[in-house]
Length: 412
Ligand code: NIG
Ligand code: FE
Image 1 (cartoon, rainbow, N blue to C red):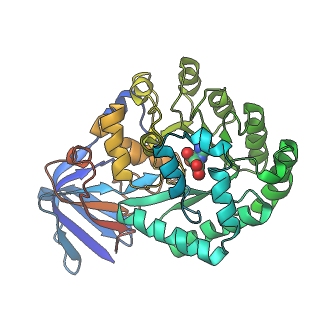
Image 2 (image 1 turned 90 degrees about the vertical axis):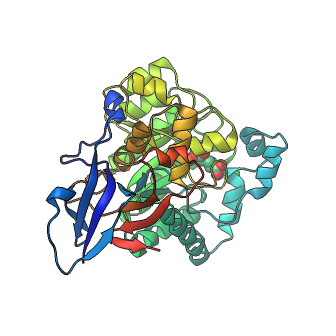
Image 3 (image 1 turned 180 degrees about the horizontal axis):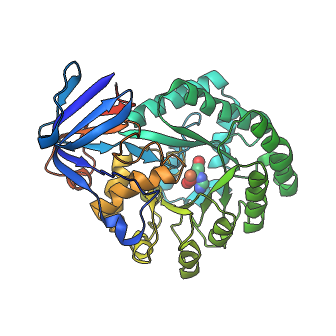
């Protein structure tokens, strides 16, 4: 299978040698080639360059991209797309004035999704999740991380992780699975958090390891959920089995989870709507990627991660959707990029870097995707006719993506 894109108006995020991620001032550099070609073979990027150097190929499918852009597909490093039903009732409660915390205190929130998921068969859960995955791929996602965390029992957590495993087997894009048993304390353990932690570390984790069901471990480190001490304990239990951490931290309160995450070599620290100067110092010069989730800030009306302050302090940042039924019921990465520019004052260059190369790093797939680099997967976006890559965030809410390619095959 070979394809040749010709006359590409802008080939975006071209890296002959891709760095693992970009940080600080480098985030504002987005290398492009104007009037470019891109040749893909066997699902991989074979060659690219200026049209002047376009090889004369016969017997290849040629796509004339006059007026259009080609970019690496979005890399969404934080989602919860495996869930059952929806939380539209809570959405209306929120409009009427209840906060995310108020809803959780009434027994809604994560525990509401847990009840619905417990009564949903694995096959049905797979079908619902598959539709969401197909939807976000149409919107341009070409690599994705998916979490458990609406099970909160041995059977239901394994059910979720098996659904992710099935998605990995059925779909041709990089998918990473994250075990988020520590998403909330389930009803049955409400007065016995220690018992629940033991269930996670001594029963679930070994079984997950045995069946190879998770690439990462996650914890909701937050007041009323899991403390910094609990979070460290879970990260260490994961590390003992070779499973790295990616954690939810500083969504509502800065309680010290950032330093703990860095100390325990977490691959990413996600949310960070509330971040203090010590947190920024802790992340600086580490290998831990901070991840902002602007869809969650938008939907919950909470502060946006202070990306400007972080980038100006030389930190990297990745953008992800957080697609979930409670705090961000959309997996549209185009929206994340636009909101990052409009609400977080990131430049289009910074936002596109954050949603491609840095997003890939935040889920450990940077060697495969995230940039236009020879040998990487041909997971690509072909836009409509647009003015420049600035159009993507500028025309927020518009779908400017014409086609999505996964390993060189058009996704429909
Ligand atoms: O990333 N904050 C914790 N977890 C999710 C929300 C989960 C839910 O409300 O269902 C988040 O925002
Ligand atoms: Fe999340």
